[in-house]
Image 1 (cartoon, helix red, strand yellow):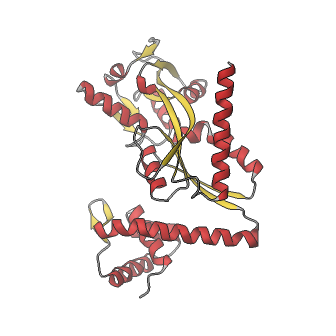
Image 2 (cartoon, helix red, strand yellow):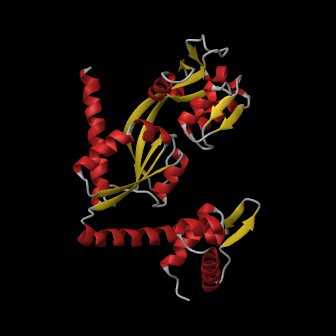
Image 3 (cartoon, helix red, strand yellow):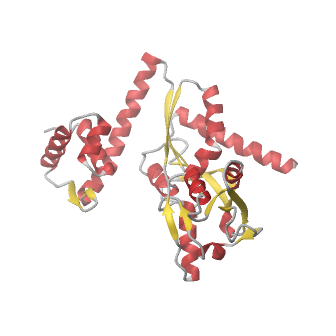
Length: 306
């Protein structure tokens, strides 16, 4: 059997989603056909690529190695197909973007709208991920550009550029014991139940770091996937939450929550862009990075004049 891109794409789908059924649904193919392709691929390579566990299907060490190789091959083929489609459909490029929820909720809608107005024939594929996954996605060539909160460390092979800044605040129910406070510190929060975001998010990582320094566990009542879910759970009295001030004020106008200043060194965040290299980007991706640089420069000039 020759190794073909369809089998590699199906292998990636199974290894990423953890089940044959989920992979079959995403790729619009019968589950039995997916199983046959994976079995044939393992026979051709003479090694086991996937194994079942209590968490579903996970890649073996050989499968993990094949994941990186397969992504490069599949992405290269996708880029070839996109470039060839330019001649038939007028499409001028494809930019794959991974971004954290803060970037998507605060800055990207306006920035991407401005970009599309200038380059209406560029396709943008935007996916939400936590900052750690974004950096990994850029390093592994799953994304052209990443928008993430600065975690202090960057994987080898990823270049970071400044993007935006924001400030975190605490939101509490209006009748909560902390509602009368003008500011709160991280130790103040550790005494109360928290509504957290996904495991691995910037906010959760910082809470766990500070909690470890104080020898106090973080009391997550639950973890959710969006800031609106955080605020709704806070309003219901399930706990307190942390989110960017601009979003917190927006939610406070319509929900029964109060916004309190967060006095912590990590409450002021630097959001960054991540790329593998500027020279290695497609022309469309370069144009998007150039626009982001222009936005940063303009914001800096306004701040200097102010």
